[in-house]
Length: 301
Image (cartoon, rainbow, N blue to C red; front, side, top):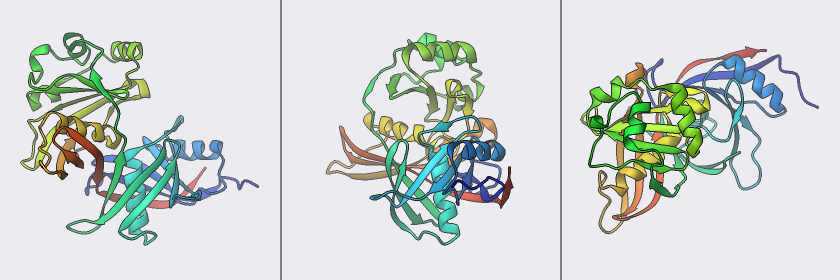
């Protein structure tokens, strides 16, 4: 018998940052066993974060089971909500540093929780590798839809697509910050080609330790701009390795770098990117990040 949704524990957590109010906010509902989809949807609407993760009893072969809801619908996977969830589980003593497996609608995702310098934990998650192909939208057309011009592009890096995302490199951070997309036209052009997200970035990062700064536009998913996007940052890391922005060891191994996102929205977040492989051969990609708990309490619906 399903229990009524009257009051349940919930937490609000900002992922990919240590500073409340920065990064990307997620809800976490730790005691979701027994809630049906309608109940989880009502709770996600009440939390009102871009996504809320619900912790359920795991099936055989997984250590955890998560479902993710926006205020309007369920989605298959959410990177920042996963980081937020494992941050909360570590902070409350439910998990220790180690390796885990999340079962979710997108499949099974390997997770690693490691102790972070300065306290807390860093949560790593594997991201899938999709085939790469040239962007189906021409550069001049795409830059016009994004509110920029062809002259802004970084000519050393090509326009390419991975899965449902297109990756666009610009030369200057000031140009990245200036973009104001033509939202309806961007959605229409994306739908023509099965593109949902546009990750625009520059190697002109704000901090010396960062390799890129980016912005992610996904109006087709109901998100005009996402502050910090874990799922889109995995392919970014692979792209950078494929085009030698990241130098993989000649005899194979892993490289870690840092990426910036959210600065243009006043919600700066920092993502750790890890690529394993050798020159010309990417074997795996992981995205990692910190988080901070903003609020815990009882949610009443």
